[in-house]
Length: 222
Image 1 (cartoon, rainbow, N blue to C red):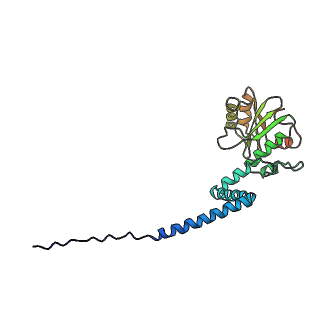
Image 2 (image 1 turned 180 degrees about the horizontal axis):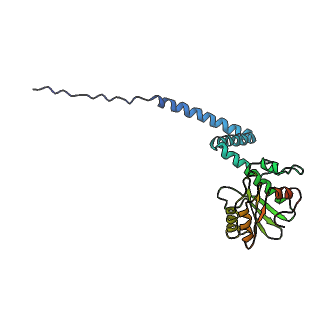
Image 3 (image 1 turned 60 degrees about the vertical axis):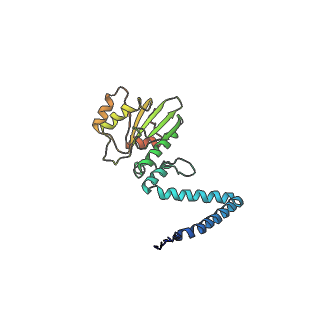
């Protein structure tokens, strides 16, 4: 009679990973932090809000590229955070406008327009794909003025293509009544000739005319 041998398989218990031992500890730790945070928030709500806001600002500063952040800050128009871009009277020289960044130059033109009593509102709206509008001016008589700002070096005059572009967009796209091009340089002969051919010429403000306007001269809409 043949003996039968029964094989007994030993089942191995799965080894507990170290992570399984750490999870409860991590959970208790986070639970304690949560309870402490709730207590702090209940006792000092203002401090908690400030801490959360500061954390959010730090995360944003780490996420946004420095160059892009500079552009964003330059376009902030909140009075408490943004100092005026337009120099004080007596310092509104062409050299002062040249030292500005393009974004700050647009803001300065908007502030200069806003100082006129006939202006209801002037806003710097220039950005990527702005379709030619850098400053939007609303007059008290209902007219809307498009201003294209060209922050150029003295030798880099504005050419005819810019005049043609602005002439093609200020009425049909932006629904403005008039348009002006303001530059820290000048205009080429071709740009001036093109402008004289238009049924409703655009106001061309070169560097000298800009300084006159900034120091009490007539604005482009008069």
